[in-house]
Length: 170
Ligand SMILES: CC(C)(COP(=O)(O)OP(=O)(O)OC[C@H]1O[C@@H](n2cnc3c(N)ncnc32)[C@H](O)[C@@H]1OP(=O)(O)O)[C@@H](O)C(=O)NCCC(=O)NCCS
Image 1 (cartoon, rainbow, N blue to C red):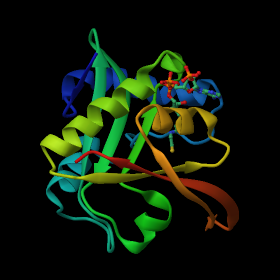
Image 2 (cartoon, rainbow, N blue to C red; image 1 turned 30 degrees about the vertical axis):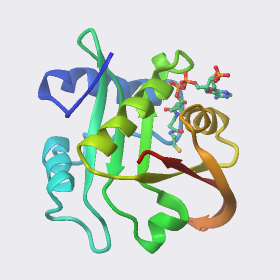
Image 3 (cartoon, rainbow, N blue to C red; image 1 turned 120 degrees about the vertical axis):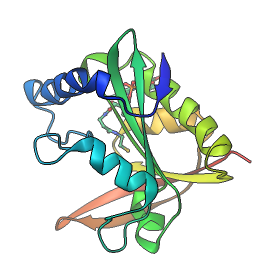
Image 4 (cartoon, protein in one colour; image 1 turned 180 degrees about the horizontal axis):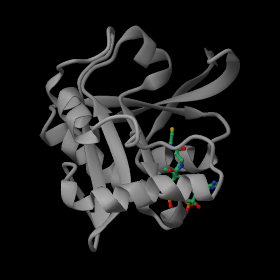
């Protein structure tokens, strides 16, 4: 398994991964909306901080791949705004449904933390997850996440309790 900059060679596999979420009725697909826009353009825009919506910061997207298959996506936001400090954090990720519970999420975050330190010069990162997202909380904790607190956020009109973890990577 390796963590790479997104590559068109994996696009078909990426589309399959989006399809797996729909097939398994998982409401929130964590991947980019390939049906709505050119994901490679979007990924480049984020990487270089161009054409971003107001208030958005630049971010590097990375893909976990294995043996020709797309396994998961992780994005590293290069800085934090007030909103990101409260609920978005520095890092977001998702693993394709068929690969859940096999260690991919833990591995992907570990490789991304090394990338964030070496390539982006980050010294500590904030990662948030819903309080009831046990899998994501485990992934963060297994990578050294220290829980700062739980905060209640209103997202799309619904109240959500979220955990805020910091990971020191200096
Ligand atoms: C959260 C997610 C990334 C976890 O990825 P994964 O590849 O399944 O994680 P791992 O296999 O590395 O599992 C890490 C630990 O979490 C546990 N775990 C994973 N999913 C779990 C679940 N649904 N419920 C309880 N525990 C879970 C694993 O058993 C493992 O536990 P262990 O440390 O005791 O062995 C994946 O479920 C996913 O993509 N979910 C949808 C998107 C999402 O929630 N992203 C995170 C947003 S904050």
